[in-house]
Image 1 (spheres, rainbow, N blue to C red):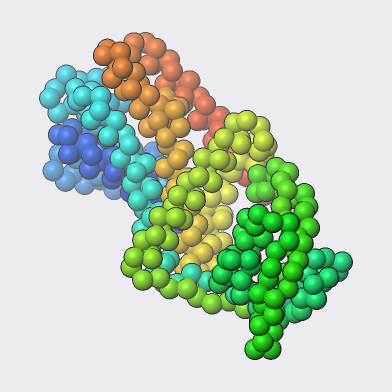
Image 2 (image 1 turned 135 degrees about the vertical axis):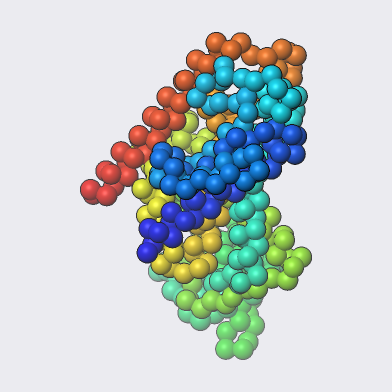
Length: 351
């Protein structure tokens, strides 16, 4: 059942991406010949208006085929008024941006739904106090609740680490609650070397505590929910951009790249973990699709945007032969990345 849910999630995200292209194309009067979810043999086709809507056998992608635009052969064009390639470059750029934008919008709406359902957060109660740590020296105890660090109010456990590392002074003041009594304690955090999510060595400050498993569910009003959804979409987008940068610069090893098997597997696991986990992961995949499609690879939306920017700047279209060979290189790169991801997936599955 988890695999079915995963495939449905992927199909939904692909549908939104292609719907963005479709709506923008129709806005500028471009004839859309085919709207397909999936590749390969068509399982279902229905013509609505002048567009063929299709579901195909391999639900791992999709495409919108516009008149005068063919990713497999960029030299295939049309001079009709309703053709993609007769539109102004800025109009074509909007059509291309509409797909990734739809993915970012989808992620925003998912985060908005999460905010309305309620976000689980750990409360700032101290669980274990590490031996020979600043917390032990300051006599912090299990069950203490952290109320304030210096001038920063602490509502949730995640606030503690941020406040400690953002403090300007070597010594910090903790306001805690113990047995219905408030106490102030002075601590000098210990500086350690740690690894961030990309495996890079970083310095951070700790006091040597871990949380009690006490949590609450935070539900947001409409205004706060909008802010939460925007913040989470921005955070996820930044994370994916940084991940791509770290991969290209070699900071993140290529064996960390996951393919479609990993995506389906993790989505299936998220569906078993509950609706919130599934919504969180679906939003992250949606942002991922939006960011990756903006990469300046000729076969992707980002590559086509670069071609159109070139035409806007030089006031002449790129050489057809050059576009053709660059597109072939783009498909080769994408194929190589997909095969690498698939190889890593199989390698992980085999242990």
